[in-house]
Image (cartoon, rainbow, N blue to C red; front, side, top):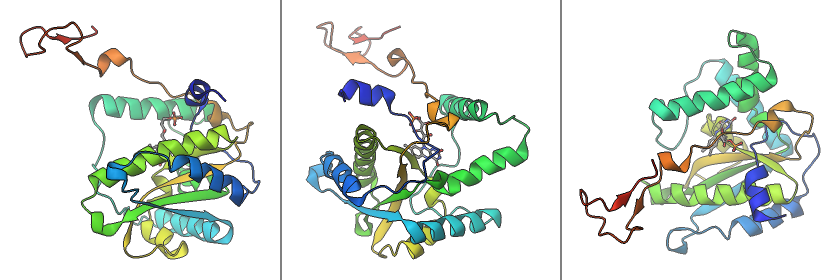
Length: 239
Ligand SMILES: Cc1cc2nc3c(=O)[nH]c(=O)nc-3n(C[C@H](O)[C@H](O)[C@H](O)COP(=O)(O)O)c2cc1C
């Protein structure tokens, strides 16, 4: 597949065939993804590739905790809500997904059902939990490295006929994941990636998320040959 096609066609996959993913295929994907750059080539990541019984126990534990109203238990520091254009984009993708799934705004049971699917990692046959060594905390640059790695994984998976969704929901009860996946205490849980063969009949899998026009977030400096000094007109804006 052409790189352009992979990038443009990849979407987050939230419905999977209940078909096992061969370990060798996951290994090939990891071999490609680990070519991702990292700060000073530190490669600070660990992969915990989970399937079968342990993954079922994680789904069950996450569901029970979320249903009982337990507080979110994540290991990285998070903000407490998006604002402005970030919030608008967050709503936009939720509306796209709910419309595709026929979930009405006021249909609380169906909305709840969708959220719970997320906590089960969309019933994907495989979950990759990405961690980094705890001594690196505060680990902003390691977070960056694992972000680069995550994108490399989802692209490589797509190229190999597999779908993924990077998701925070699956590790929102990180102590459950840590326990059932036997994650060592000296690692911090960053994120997980659900993976499997896409269910082509699952309509949310067709949703194409929107990207902002470059003009809204890109500045070009010095391209007109000027000094770029503020006030000197050196910054070229696109609008
Ligand atoms: C760090 C991160 C966390 C995410 N967490 C979730 C999640 O918990 N649930 C979910 O359904 N999607 C999650 N996503 C997927 C995003 O919603 C998705 O990437 C975004 O809407 C763009 O859509 P696309 O991947 O189809 O291009 C997450 C993505 C990232 C990068």
